[in-house]
Image (cartoon, rainbow, N blue to C red):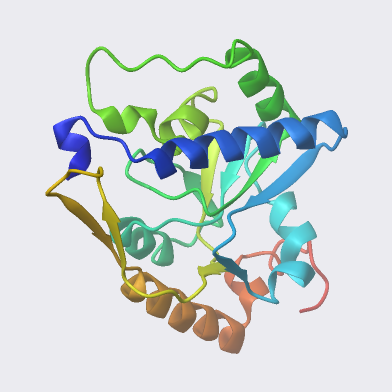
Length: 209
């Protein structure tokens, strides 16, 4: 991987800055919670009717709720859990969709008020990616990942990134497996009663599906 060679794509830097700019805008207009979406994310219709109930069962004192991940290992783990949320793990890569609470916005604004990012002296250059600089920068145990899939990726062809104008290395990305998995799982939930799977009916928090 290019990260193992100490290389970081300009697009990766731009993504982080775009996320921080969106978070700063959400804070400036005074919202308590904001849903941040990247431009290649598709939202399933089930989110709208489930949204209030979903946030009601979110862990207390959360600062961010990761709603989308590109990690196959994470997707398999999330699909097998009965909990609506679980603590986010470092390998749960992906910033496609997430909620951020005002407390999280304030924390990041204070942390990056100088608008400066220091290259890590040790560890991987991947520590400069948005997952680490945003989710990893929030207080411990306040970032959680949703196991109910409400987002997918818009279809796009395999992407090939040239590392630099004179580079001989390329980065190839394709999310076809993840897209198919999320679609199949979403259909299964919709057919089987998504609110019952969330455990809300048993606790009387939602009266009807």
